[in-house]
Length: 170
Image (cartoon, rainbow, N blue to C red):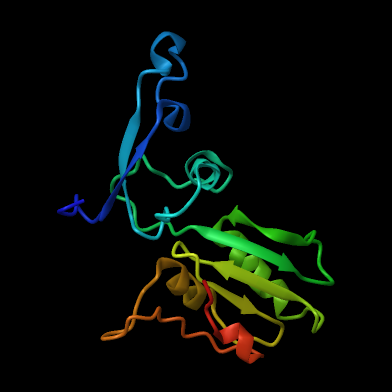
């Protein structure tokens, strides 16, 4: 958008099929599109329609009808954490911030072969491994894409058990 709308910096325009604005009125549903403001960290420019659909309608969907909300960053995770009650997720899936906190707690006590990959809206990923001293707030900062002053790179600020856990890679 050329100018922010309130605190929002982007607008999302959805086709009638994706927006589902008038599902209760099938006679017009195929002709009514949906638009609403979003934060940069909520929907990535390169996100395929299936990811956008998951973010606006899935189990961890962003509250797009709340125009007074704080940023609700996309939380895309894949992981293999053992031992734990979480089944390994070898591909990225949309999760809630609460899931991230729970996985970080379990990762702290996991076997050395365990890992948790976090992807932000820019497509950058970071890998966390057992022994990482990282707070959920630091990971959320990475997800929101906050940048340090005068830097073109994201402010990750994550101290991890291995060098690859510190890197971001597209």
